[in-house]
Amino acid sequence: MTSLDSRALRSAFGSFMTGVTVVTTRDAAGRPVGFTANSFSSVSLEPPLLLVCPGKFLSSFDSFAGCTHFAVNVLAEGQEDVATTFASYKGDRFARVDHGEDALGNVLIGGALSRFSCRTHEVIDAGDHAILIGEVQAFTHAGGRGLGYAGGRFFSLGLERAALEPADGAALCGAIISLGDDVLLEKTDAGFRPPQVVAQDHENTRTRLVQELARRGQPVTLGPAYSVFRDDAAQSSYFLATATGASDAFTRCPVREIPDQTFASSAIRDMMMRFAVETRTRNFGLYIGDARHGDVHQPFERT
Ligand SMILES: Cc1cc2nc3c(=O)[nH]c(=O)nc-3n(C[C@H](O)[C@H](O)[C@H](O)COP(=O)(O)O)c2cc1C
Image 1 (tube, rainbow, N blue to C red):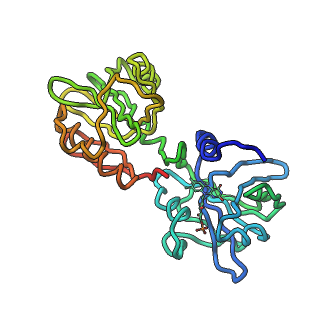
Image 2: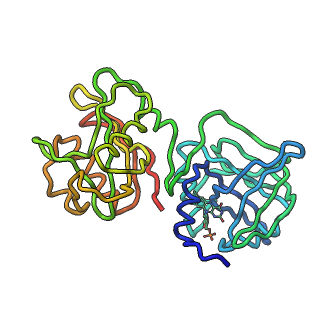
């Protein structure tokens, strides 16, 4: 037995950026069962093998450990709700998502980017999980982008790219930095705002934002894009971030006190009010629009 801190280890494992799959099979009564998994890996082309690791904590573990067939469905961008259903919904998960059955009797999820229908090759016991290796019998692959997962959050490359798309005029890039239950703000004559930099171009914006914050004395880990909007002449892109050290570079504001603050613009106030609400529900969306009108896209859950 080792004495590693398992919470810290889980968080370090979670730093590996992955896609998201839903793995399905049938229980002894023939009913479909499934769970969300990011432990998927391709293994071999000849023979065609893949693996996924079901945890022994799964209510469906026995079904997966003893299955003769199973399917891996790689989720597409926009399928956060499917991922969340198969990660946490306790009722009939399949009643909530479009699905079908293939010639092998495997259950395939509608709208998935690719779907691998497998015959079980081997099940290897591995600590608190098993390694389920499948031989691919058939597969589908639609074009498009996959749903991403990193640091406990879903992300979409399409939306991240939209946040970084070239804009005419000035481009501002900022970070909504969490430090415990506080958020770090910069004081300006007009009011508070999240720390920001003026981006010269859209190359390496994220890296430059992190470097600039470190230069100002505030090291951060940058998360997904949170809000992209055009305010007067400038395009503003804000990212979620976590402080990796305390410093007095910025003002600490408890998230619950956000409604009491004066912000530098109404667009920043709207964004910070949304952040205050979403911090409570742990459901963060990405806003794309202008200072007044826009949409919050594809909520993702922070676990
Ligand atoms: C992004 C993501 C990836 C996951 N990956 C795995 C995994 O690889 N293996 C696993 O056993 N559980 C994984 N889980 C957790 C399971 O999906 C979750 O525990 C399961 O759906 C619970 O099902 P149950 O209520 O039937 O026990 C993951 C959850 C999420 C949100």
